[in-house]
Image 1 (cartoon, rainbow, N blue to C red):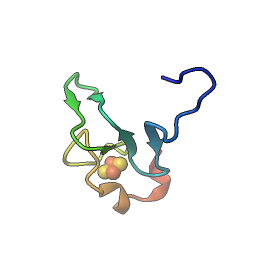
Image 2 (image 1 turned 60 degrees about the vertical axis):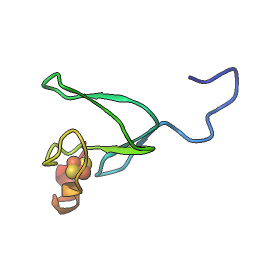
Image 3 (image 1 turned 90 degrees about the vertical axis):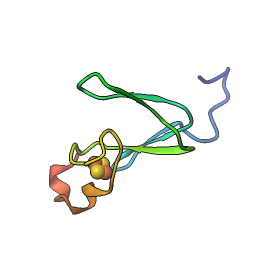
Image 4 (image 1 turned 45 degrees about the horizontal axis):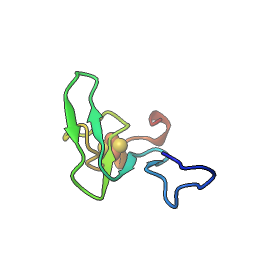
Length: 71
Ligand code: FES
């Protein structure tokens, strides 16, 4: 939440082109199947390519996927 005109120093959410979504701080991530996972690290990487073996978290698999197939 932004108070008044003050912008946050660092965004809570960063979208990495061709890679994960980085979440800063405490969040709950809900998977398409309805399961939920809470972030446990200062910065957590959420998979956006759908290929991670440790959903909903990024395991780096996006690095071996052809870039044209990534969001
Ligand atoms: S975004 Fe990294 S494995 Fe999917």
